[in-house]
Length: 448
Image (cartoon, rainbow, N blue to C red; front, side):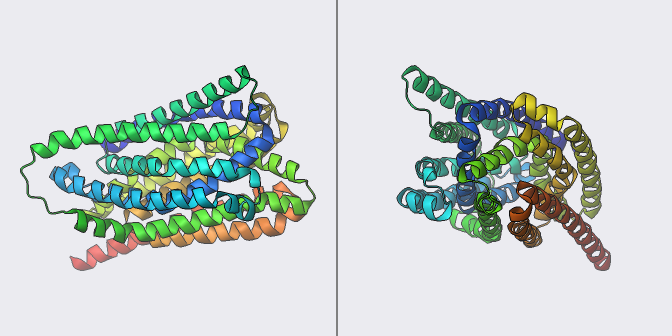
């Protein structure tokens, strides 16, 4: 792996680790302050945020990363500026529409889709954060593309600090004035973090381009119109993929408490178990994925550049090393969580059930990390359609399993479905990466 990839991964990982550490203690605070049911209500809103983000920014962010990667060799800053400007225009237009839709339909979404009317005020707060999250995502996409990760890394940490400080001050204000604490405090923290990070990123990117464009003498081949066309062409399938996947994930989130009701649990107990699983245990399992996620973000432009230079040997080496690293790292994390899961759950969250979930979910680690990195390679090769079908298929498989298993086995039915679907995803992603690299190598050999 080249030095830029290593340094960028290290920087993002360090920032991610610091963010996760802060978030780790933050979740402990939330779980002890608002309880398992409060965490369950809070977690129900996350799919709404993920679904709207996938429509407004996710595909556009990846497209910006791909199309600005050439700046590292051409130093054509005007082209990059037009690409980023077009991305911001597209993303903000979509996010404004989504924000207005959520603000006016929060009650319907809460009652009819999430089956929890108490989420309505949380949805309205989340809606206000979408435009700021879109700005943040587009600018980060640009910096990922040119492999300068200092601003994305710092803004990630900055966002988390502002989020936690906001919630803490709201908590202190409520306690001092004897106001009733509500989980909406946590969502206000999310809004404050997005506003702060988007303003920070906007300031830095304006300073960067104002210095470089003024001294740029090279001919610009882009315009807002042409850049929008390129972004739109790549972002549509990516966004469609994310929308479908997040829609299925949203259905999963809503279905779990409902199927737990079918198992015989009350709404309070179902939401509490859902809160323990998604608000305590799963974040613990995902904690080490900071490293693989950082690596995956920077792997995409490296693979794209190697493909453009017809350096398929570099792609093959990157895939082999990435797969080995993902499995090794995932195996070590699996052993750690398997041995320490129950005591950690009792000590950290003061909840024995969360420890049992951590122990069972530990087997996810190797397959989860392998899927993440292999999917990034597929995106770098431009095979977003393959990645879409894999993700969609495995999510539908999981929905089928949890729908049929939870009424008989309770929450363990969902855990089993999660393990099976992630195993299938890892296998298919790796199989498709090796197949695509072999096809490219044969194509190159025939051309010679």
